[in-house]
Each structure stands twice: as structure tokens, then as C-alpha cells.
Image (cartoon, rainbow, N blue to C red; front, top):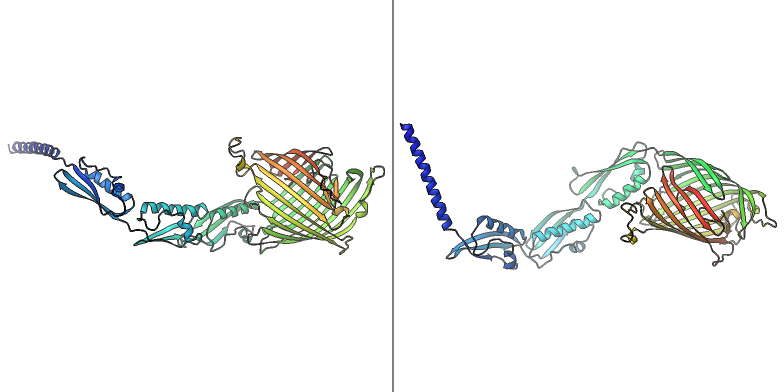
Length: 585
């Protein structure tokens, strides 16, 4: 009985509470509060219209505390204020809403600390916030982003804004520019560490620049000593203002044996074998030994250290022996006879770079040569012989100055190379001749992609940044103090490396001028077409109005043995075909 009575009491209580809540809800709806007015208090420089432009609370609409909270956040996110709140005041027409704000200080000065790459006035050009304006933390955050973007765009990717301190109207920005504490090289077993280290121009204490470092890595990989080069960074122990660079290399074989095949319309088919070691003893020394057989037979051996900078000398020593048979001798553009030639050359040279940018270099070489001309045959009637009497020994010193402004980190040539050479022969060490030769040469390589961008569209990846359409030009001019140079010392044009479309050494003399121009057109990654034009002359008394030229087309194919070269030239003499390795220049 008591249990039943208890259930009845509970049910009655529940029904009463439900009735009461329903009544209260009806009263709340009947007494709904509306917004009488919306205003702002505390602003001095930021206008009320600007502030109220982001609020959703409007006069005449129901008051919603969730919307008020969003309005406070929206005003604060405008960035001009350090404090925002909403005050509610009852009025006969409803509730008056007043947003109370506290403006940030007026900017008096912006200073930077820790910046060494750029001066403060340079960084201020990236800052829109100016003295005399109310500080806006949103705008200033964008200013800081632009400063970091400037650093990163120029390669300083580790630079960051570490702190911003605001005291009154003075804003101090702390910039951290990480420097290299140590460069750690690992993984090299054969290659000496200093050989790797000298290619990385980044030094301990330098600012880290990813653009420059990437270029240095490209130059290191271009040595051909390594299968892979990986880079890591460590900043855990050194703090946020220093970084350790960890370079890990994986070496590969640097010795190779190659087969050479060549063809010239005049010289016929030739072939031989070469042995090359590009990292002898792990010191970056290079050994080349080889021979070519045929009508133009050659045998050579060279030992060199090609690397040089402002502190390191490059050097080379070598010997070469040529045994040519059935060569043509020309005079006044007419074939006079055929002959055989032997030529032994022994040389040694030393050089170094100079200048702040190391674009300049010099190389001094001593040459000892013994030449013999023999077996004159197939002469024309009344032939002219200005050759065979010039055999003998020649000792000369050669000084080469080079300005190389090519980009050293690209896989192709881009830029300018200018070199000037002086060669003085003296009657010393058995030398039979004395003369001075001097010549200068300019080579220029210009990618044309940017000029033709939007004009031609040959599909994606045809002319890329790493394999562009390229114009290449070479100009050479030379002379001598003697009008009648020994035959082996004369400037000579004709053949696959000077004037294509003419016999080898068809034009000779103590003066020379030569121009070679090529348009190298990539067709595929490893295949390109080349259109070319050659013009020049060589004789004892240079007639600047008398030039010989040719034009033609060629192909270049990249293979594991090197770049194959095939040229077909149309010249004033006859059309000629040449086959060999590498570009002409």
C-alpha cells in the first residue's frame, strides 16, 4: 500500500514540473530581449564604422549572447586592439550594446636585431606598418611573413623571426640567421676528405644559403666520383642560431675504358682505345692513356690535377705522338702534294685561379716538340713546297689567361668564356725557331627558352630548364710577329673542328680569324639536332675581305661512352661528313 502511494506522489511531481517549465518557456518568449542600439567605446583612431563592419549584432534584432561572443572575437581579430568586451545596458526599447575596446599603441619606431644579410632599411621595404599608425598585429604578422619570404627567396631558408617585443610604441623584431657550425663529411673511403671539402665553398661560421649550397652540391656530383650525395642537418646541440651540415657520399668506380670511333671524309675511318681514371689515389688526379689507329694515328698519356682555385695550383704533364700518313698539303687553296708526318710533343703546365670570384685563371705551359715531314708523293706539276724544310725541334712557353663567366652548376654551358694566349718560341733546349704568336677567343652560350616562351609549344618537357634550346658561338682571332711561321706553328683552318666543309689544314698562315655558330635544338632528352654556320680564313697576309664559309646540319646523341657527334657540312670545296665525340666547342 505504501509502495503504491509513493508511485502516485512521484507521478504527480513530474506532471507539476512539466507544467511549470512549459509556463516559464511561454513567459521567456513573451519577454524576449531585443537590441536597442549598438555602439563602440574606447576607440580613438580606428573609426566606429570600421569596427562595427565586422559585427553581426544589429539594432532591432533579438539579443543573442553567442553572437555577441563572436562579435568580440571578430573585433579582436581586426588586430588593432589589445582588449575587447561588450557592455549591456537596459533601456526602454531593449538592451543597448556597447563594445568596449582598447587600442594598441601608436607605432613610433620599428627596429631589427640579429640581421646581417640585409640592413634594416632594406627589411623596412617589406613592412607595410609605418610609424604614426596604430599597431595592427594581423598586418604586422603579414609584414613578418614577407621578411621571411625575402630571406627564403634568396636562399636563406633557415632564417626565422624569433621574437617581437613591443614596449610603448617601439617594436623590436629579433631575427635569427643560422650559421654553419661544422660540416661533417662521411661515407668516403677512397676519396680524400679535402677533395670533397674544397668543392663545398661553405665554411664554418658562414650563413647557410640553400641556393648556393645546392649549386655546390651540383658541382660535387659533376666530378663523377659519387653515385649519390645526401645532405642532413643537425641543430639539437648547437641552439637555433647554428646548424651542422652532414654530407654523406656513396662512391662509385672512377676508372673506365672507352672505344673511340671516328670518321672524316678526308681522314677516313679511325678507332682506338682509351683508359681514364678521374680520381687516382682519391686525390682528384686524372690519368688518360690511349691511342687511335688509322691514317691519322695518335698515342698519348696525360697525368693531371685539374682542380685549381686561389690557393690550389692545377697542373698537368703529358706526352703525345702523332703518325699521320697521306696528308694533303695546300698552297693558295690548291692541293700541292701528299706527305707523311711524325710529331712528338712533351709538355708540362701549371696554373691557378685569381680574383675574388675566381672567374679569372692563368695557366703556364712549357712545350717541347720534334716534327718530321717526309715521303712527299702525288705532287702536281710545278708543286710548291713550303712544308718539308720546317721540320725540327721547337721549344716554346705558352701563357693562357681565361675569364670564365659560365654558370658552373648547370649541366650545360651558359654564359661567356674569354681566353687569350701568348706563345713564345725560343732557341733553347735544342729549339730551332724563335717567334711570338698571340690569339684570343670568345665562346658564348645563350639559352633561348625565355625568348620563345609562348611563341612555340612543342609539348611538355621538350625544351626544359636543364635541356634548353641553345645558341652557341665562337670567335677567334690571332696573329704573329713573323710573317712566315714554321709549318707546325701556323694557324690552320679546315676540318671537323674549325671550318667544316673544307680539307683539314686547307688554309694556313701567320694570321687567322674564325667564327663558328650553332643552334642546338633538343629533340629528346639524349638527342639533339644542330644547325651550324662557319666562316673564316688563315693566311700570311690577312685579307679581311676574303673569307670562306660553310653551313650544315648535325646530330648529337648522348651515350654511356660520351656524346656522339655527326655533322654534314656544305662548303665551298665539297660536302663533307664528320663523325666523332663531343661538341666542337
